[in-house]
Amino acid sequence: MKILIDSLSSQVQVQLDGFPGGGPAATVPGRRLNTLLGAIHSGGTSLVPKPGAEWTWAYSSGPIDEAQLDGCDVFFIMTHHLPSHATDPKFVWSETELDAIESFVKRGGGLLLMSNHNPYPFYDVPLAARFGVTLHNVAISNEQGWVNITGDLLNTSAFGETYLFGVNAIAAHDGCAFSAPPSPEIAVFRPIASFSSDCTSAGQPVPPDWYFAAHLIYGNGQVVFVANSGTCGDYGGNPEPACGAIAWGSNLMFVLNCLRLLGHQPQATALGSCPGGQG
Image (cartoon, rainbow, N blue to C red):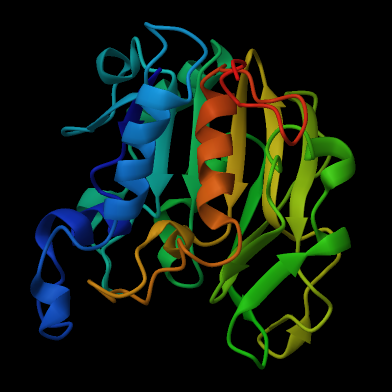
């Protein structure tokens, strides 16, 4: 399975370059995604059903095009934005790039789009719209300052044996939200994780059809949307743009589930069964 990681994702930029001006620890690269990247490597060497199905990953280079996506199984975006609030024209997805990504998914590719709270979704909004999904550029949180999604907020009736396999909780500081009206292009749009009743956006309750994480089938491919890419970041090490939450809840397991299933690899059929299918 080949994973292409968007090099202009905010989490990736901090991993590769640090975050100058964010404090002593923030200027040090290589301290943001080490847990995730190590787990991807492990998933590619020990959890696959057979040789030749190992996981490999690479960072994108320049504008996304058909050539880069050709041969990839999953395109993984972790908030397509600068790590700061500043805007930059180079982050605007061109129509050609959006066409290439949409076509990639229609042909059977997997897209994992993890965005973030306002203003970070700015460049992710038009990409989500290509799939008939509204990415709400808002900031959703609660008085505790972090969102812990457990129990009935997880759609285990639909995803308990797949995307939510082994997942008891998804945790984040905050997030944006996703919703989708009925569309002939979308075969299925279903929530994976919903916000708790104590979450608000600009002081108002979160609408019931706004989701923290959602899944859709689009053409022959699939997309998973997640409202906070900080769920991929290491806690400590490099704390910018905010402390990572990879160790919170079942965040790491959830991300690995997403990559596996978007990349057309089978998940275990029940807890207690090895994901690779061999004991």
